[in-house]
Image 1 (cartoon, rainbow, N blue to C red):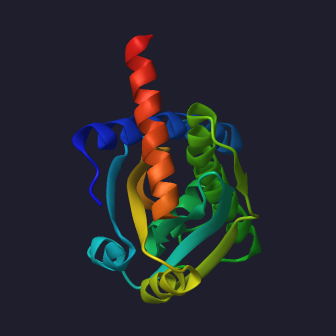
Image 2 (image 1 turned 90 degrees about the vertical axis):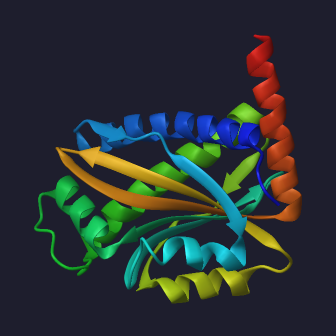
Length: 206
C-alpha cells in the first residue's frame, strides 16, 4: 500500500499541525523556545521498518511507546538514539549529556516529552479527522533497536504498516533528530486515509 502524493501531503500537513501544538507544549514544559522542522512522512510495511531506521538510528535507543485505540488504533513510538536522548535530557535539565545513563529524573523528562509529542500528533488526528482516540500510559524503554522492532512484529497479528515521521527539534541552539513511528493495521490505515482525504477536501471548499 503506497500513499499518493496528495495523501502524503495531507498527512504531512496534519502532522505539521500536531507538531506545532507539540512545540508550544514543549516550550511551556521547558521554559525555552522549541522549534520543530516541517516533518517528513513516509509509509512502509512493518517488516521494512528496520531498513528505514537502521541507517539513521544505531545500537541502543530510547523509545517512548504508547498504545492508542478507537476508530483508528495501533502503536505509537518516539525513537531517539543515545546521543539525541542524552542531548535532550541535558537541554531540559542542565545535567551533563552522559552516554545513555538514564536516571529517574531523566526517565521522567523523556517520557513526558514523548507523551507530549505523541499526544499532540495523535490528538490532532482525532480532533481534525473527527475520530475518537484513547491513549494508554506512555512507557519509556532503553533497548537495542532490533529488540524494539522485534517486539512490534510480535505484538500484533495481520499485515501492518508503519507511518514514519522524521522529526527534527531545535532547543537552545541545539539540534537533534527523533523518529515518530505510528504502526497501524489495514483497517485503521483505510479509515485514516479516508478521513485524511475528507479533511483535505473540506480545506479546499472553505
